[in-house]
Length: 202
Image 1 (spheres, one colour):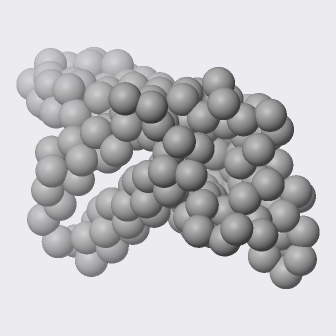
Image 2 (cartoon, helix red, strand yellow):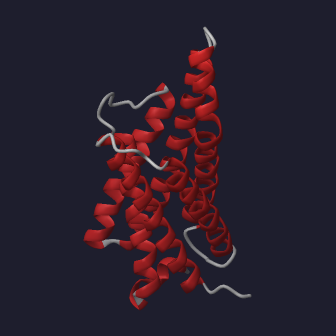
């Protein structure tokens, strides 16, 4: 089955917006100390990013421009799947062991740090894609997208470098990364629907 650039970009945009929504819902439930259905939210997120990786891969082979953005989306999507998989399969066993085995806590904490390293890397890559597309879009939307993307990219790269959120208790890397993911999805929907903006796919 042949997938057109229009439909692939539209589908990728919808899935990126949906992935941002799962992260917003998870954060809201966590902050309000509500029971978080991790398997459902993280499992859905892994499915979404698996499909995004496939769609972006198809587009990378068809488009003539913005290859950096599409390759960043592919890499970020695959990293997101790995990060979510670590959370779903390793968090509970390691922390249960840490509660039962003396001296095991550092190993459990290392798994969490590993997960966040992947998380920051994926968010930085999605921010790169947003910056690339936004610089090409121009106008008010382009300026907003480039600004949010730049903040997300730098804060997540710095968080990777120091091993924790560079802004301490302020979740700048995570929140700006989610905002960048949402704006990237909106951009793909925009260029898929707007005939005047479809040069963003060519």
